[in-house]
Amino acid sequence: MAWRVTVASIACVLVVACAIALILIGFSNPRGNDDDDDGPGPGGGGPGPPDPRPLDPDHPWWAELEREFSAYSESLSGRV
Image: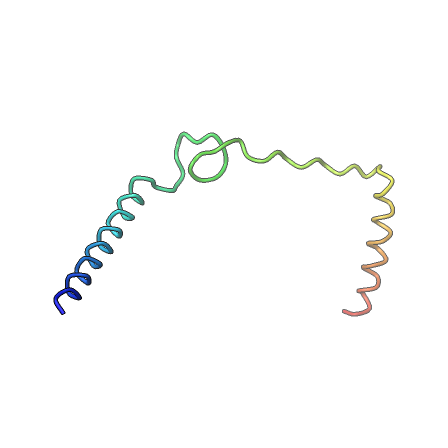
């Protein structure tokens, strides 16, 4: 019976020690906006992803896309 109390006590001490360690790690590595970060987002980082290329409406597929979308939207207008 005494060994069960000893094992339970050791387990409780380990749980408390791990909780304290996690709390201290959390305070030493705060996640938030720093004044000296190099890019968007919290905690610094790079310049972020590049901006997407703008679509060129003169591409040959653009007219086909517009026709298909127009036909699709007209097919939905009767359902609403």
